[in-house]
Image (cartoon, rainbow, N blue to C red; front, side, top):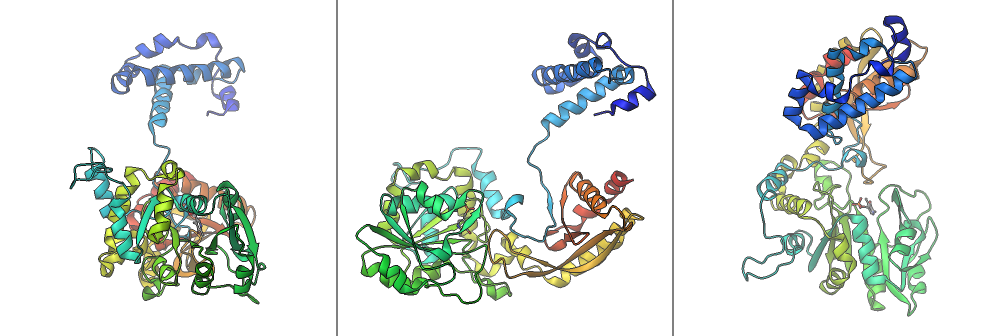
Length: 480
Ligand SMILES: *Cc1c(COP(=O)(O)O)cnc(C)c1O
């Protein structure tokens, strides 16, 4: 919006009578051309909104006649129309240092998944059609075989996300009865996903055992009653209790559950399908290990370490998966064909584990050689410094990133990037906010993080340095 005070200085004030009528505005040649291109509905709607806004400002004596010249009106209308058509969901550069960032869309889809979407989504497909028998099929069957092969499970089903998977598993197996969970595992994942609330939503009664820091096998065994429906383990993915602690492993807990004829269900959260330690990354528990340890049902996310679309994967024993699949809530939580197609393509990549660090973008970023990130930082530092001079200094710095999305919050990823500091000692906070706003306003917004009076750009996730460097002239202009 133009600053009202300026209008007093630069031109005489406009009154409502100075505004053109909507018809007159729409008949202007530039506007008529815009209508030809974008249609009457959109352009007329924006023209009306523009005139309404100008009228209010005229009434408030805060509109200058300069803003009502035909050229100025054309330009304002064109700007409004193009803003209206701009997507609200935008690509950004994630330079936060958190690779799987929930606020920035989590895992990046693999090429194979994108190709699958392009190939399948503009036409009909066999989502629920059995091509062999010619009869009705089950959408789960498109990925069930792969999930069983990859995890060693007897059966598998998929839903919208892992929160849905947990909710559904509890409702189907524990609804109306008691579910035993350790006090040390009553996690809050973020937003409204807190284990006690999920339990209540699923219609199960939570039975807490043990203490915050220590829970023993006898705590679980002693809490089992005829009302017990299942035992549950929750991977404490976003925090760690340290010091005097004790937890009961799945391998220890499974025989206790099975002796009472009960299932053991584990919410694994991230759940990596391959051992990350082979690339020097922190080890994350794997669903196949949990099943081998005796868990009857394991749930995990599709868009965390798996590197696929948003999805909730449920793997385990045939009888329990069958009960989960038949439970009415499943229909409300089912996956749509889009993520399902992407999930199938992503899971297929795991058939060639040797190629995973090339094929899965998220894993590629997680395993990017530090030397490569450092070299990128060295190359970009002088360019950024030139764009930000003389108000900010730029230096190459070692950084500690993280995997993100609740996986392994304690373990950090050694990385490198650019640390930017304002030159003036006064107003540092404002200067950093200004810079970070300018970075966010770029055509490809750059998201960094402010800490310790500096703005940090971790370059681990900067796949293509040109995406950053080509925007530097615009950044310089914005800060001038
Ligand atoms: C992330 C997470 C969830 C939620 O999974 P979404 O796929 O985000 O729905 C549930 N439990 C644990 C332990 C998690 O880490």
